[in-house]
Image (cartoon, rainbow, N blue to C red; front, side):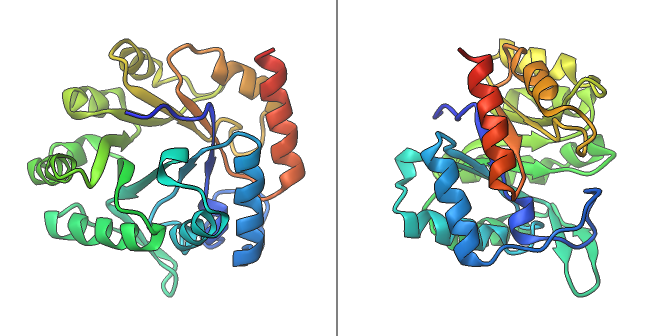
Length: 250
């Protein structure tokens, strides 16, 4: 399993601005702007990029950016997801964890990302996530993709310690929300770390209400955390947060 850059980039804002939970609306970047952003991040040491089919055309923009910049597969890590999808016409979510949909979704992601394999494929769970991970066909489909080498690692983007516990042995990675105001998944983070599995943190700034430097210090002080995702479209904000990160690690 390839190691992840300690700071990763979440691509939600590259592809979707409908039905968002962010407090401030934003315009989507065009391909040129998205490529410029990805290149700037890469040059500053960010080599891990997270995306999903439900993030609008984020997979497409990321794939084109990585290809046009000339970043090779061994120089970066990509995670994407299965199970959650978004219809921009109806502005609504739908979920499908069937084997057929998983395979179709992965094939589409490979095409959009312009790659032959996916570093981490996350189950994009909703609450209650326990019912989702109990679906036997779901795990069977993911394990088969891993056996074929199409997917290198299986992960769960989930909400409860119970869900992670239920499929712990089949997991290589966990994606969780974790910050000073949300610590419920600390047991999962600790157990994943003890098992030498990947832990990726999302929403570490608490939807923008937390002080960035404080939130980063809190996230990175946990020895079990592999990578922390940032999602801003503002290069100045990203560079400021990267400066915070470098100051913490010097």
